[in-house]
Image (tube, rainbow, N blue to C red; front, side, top):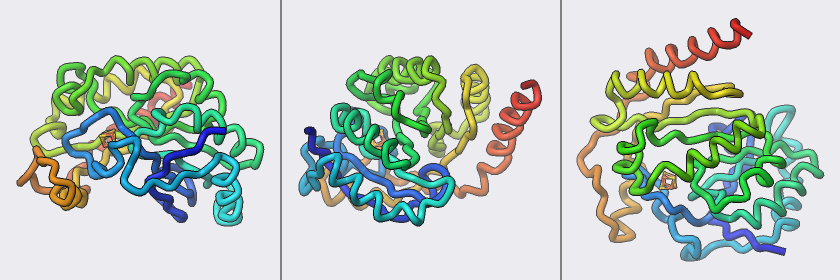
Amino acid sequence: MTLGRIHSIESMGLVDGPGIRTVVFLQGCQLRCRYCHNPDTWSLEGVHPQLLSPEELVRRLCRFKPYYGAEGGVTFSGGEPLLQKDFLLEVLPLCREAGIHTCLDTAGCGVGGYEDILRWTDLVLFDVKHEDPESYKSLTGAESTEADRFLAAAQKAGTSLWIRHVVVPGLTDGAEHLEALRRYIQKLDHVQRVELLAYHTLGVPKYHTLGIPYSLEGVAPLDPAALTPWQERFAQDLAGRAKEG
Ligand code: SF4
């Protein structure tokens, strides 16, 4: 039995997947995204992680089940949930057995075992950091190869995807980049939705508390309304593909 190292649990999440969801934030992430608002999840050890067995977590999820309705369920987020591969491989089958819909909110940078993990996953919220490998590296500090590997496994498994992308002023808000992102997404199968997420600064105080330099100091939050035209274009792309069948 593998204990999950859990940063926190949000019982009534409305933005991380369909319906009402319990969002389980797992400790650990190998990336260092410049805009990350959860630097307190980076360490796998964490400061005061909750250590929960797969059985205990599913017992707790079952208490929330009446709120999930037809669409909701559990979302494993982080940090990077794929880093806790062994825990996922135990908890996801238990969720399925309990009739709880499962989402992984991930950037795809785990430690392998993707085929097995995806077998028990109903939906992946895949965070595309950048479609260009060089820009990916300068944004996250890592190569894009691991994310590519995960995405290839998800495509092979036929897993439903919601693509997410954080739009940061001066970094990922350019028309050229967003057009390239459209082309990148057009090549993917099983995409149900694309969500552009506006950069915000809610996590900046955490950097100050943790004594970690914040490289986007002074960059103003992006008004989500500014993304509406792009959001519509991405939605039209998906609608066009659905029509083509
Ligand atoms: S993948 Fe997520 S948790 Fe990890 S550094 Fe990037 S934004 Fe933060």
